[in-house]
Image (cartoon, rainbow over all chains, first blue to last red; front, top):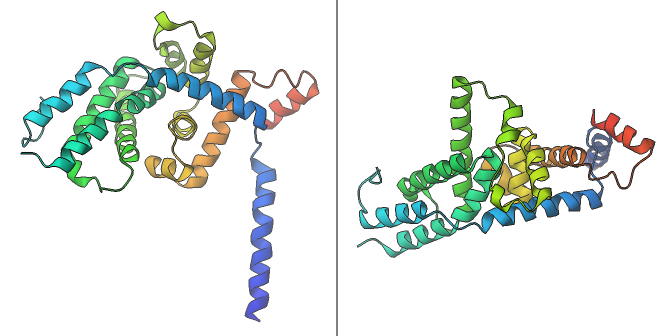
Length: 74
Length: 181
């Protein structure tokens, strides 16, 4: 008896994702998806390669030296 | 003497700055504001170092801090000045002197037109290298929510950038437009 219930549940959960996918989520084809991903990463890489502003290194150095106080950077 | 693990952690935090900046610039659309965000993130992280659990993902922790600061600041600003989405796109100019990549300009302005929840989900998953699970953790929402935001962000970008206009010149594009609403 419990086995029957289990089967029913399994069938239901198999049905649900496929029908909800059809109903709500249009998906981009893989070529377009790749083109967008490539552009996004190219833009991001360019940002990542910018030199780190000195203020951040200085901030961390400063805190390293004056270690022990809270909010010592102000 | 400061304990070695803390010094190591500081080095790791410094190493994360380029990716934090890239995220902050892409998220806010302004370099100055992004750098302020990164600075606030570093200060907050450093004063909460004891809360970081060793062995967990440091980048995810830092991105969570930055993301939360961005949103609380954004809410504060919105209360002060009304900041319609249209002006945002105009401000999204990162470094015009290197503007040889016209594609990036188009891409950036398209990115700026996305709702911020979709933009941040796409940036975390598609550019910062986080898994859907990590992105969900950073944004404090369900994995399914991240997945659908990323999907919607891609669809919107594709239509803004006409990514698929090579393939469909016919009635197909109208169908697609109808589906997207």
